[in-house]
Image (cartoon, rainbow, N blue to C red):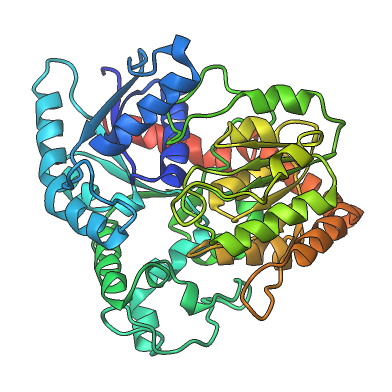
Length: 463
């Protein structure tokens, strides 16, 4: 039997690329060769950012065990890929044929045939391509299992009158699929948080195609761990946790081409100069957009706190334009604060100087914070981030949420108050450190390790 060859395909977004690449490295450790597939547009962004941050590493060259490739997403290079409805339509129209041609080209090379396809659930159509070609397949859900349940139970939601056949919202009452699972606000369902009604319907149709692609798939694995979502795993037995898919408490041995922005590594040197457990870390992921008033309130809150802070302010954070700080802000906070455009977040959260994490509650950020024992201040923006906040604040009790004022803003007083409240709560820190231990145990000797090993052996056995 030759070397098993996995083709791994990810949805073109930061929060998806990271766990799929981490899984690819785990597969390499288990003896696989991996072809990692991005869209052309995302592939170029990732390689450009990685080259700027690590010019010595030549990320455009594939490693011996991971080959980086790409296929078109169906849009012109200058198209706005933040219009997710347009992007999803284009993906379905063009990428299945492109992926099929890619696999056939690979299989035409002697000794290089793809032996399994491992697809992000958000690219579930790729599982249909694999089925058509007779290739074993597996699906990966890169977020919380609780969020996936809303997609697996479309028909139940329709029958109960929560949504229509086209995914439109009919009932805003909270829902849950078992008494022990968290309550979920249907207004925050993933396909209902983006754009207008027409775009919601497009995204719902896209999600439906992907979920149908799961039919007959033997392995549906999730970047989570049993201890933090046990009621969900006890009900949905076909979802198997293998997470957290990250290097816990240490820096990676080599840079991984996953970031869409150039990482500013000077922040790590700055953190080295700060006292242990002193720095407020603020980052809102790759999609969050602020208006100018909210940006101003956050800026003033950080200045008024007067504590060391590291703030990741993307170049497009404010209405997709450059940030407009209060006059003189950067000069006034220079003695204790640092602002960067992007950073190596896993390394930052593993740093002993970090005291808390002001976060949009994306799942990667949530797992990275948990796995390093860092308490949270929750600032969710859309989709699964609200469920993740429910986990953090109400179920795990390892963070606090912010309360908006009558204008829908988080005021500088509210932000300052919640940071000080959280930093003074020893119970939160004790609980998050306990979950850190659970995360490490799960991937070293617990259910996640067992599921991951079982998945690897199953995929090898079909090669």
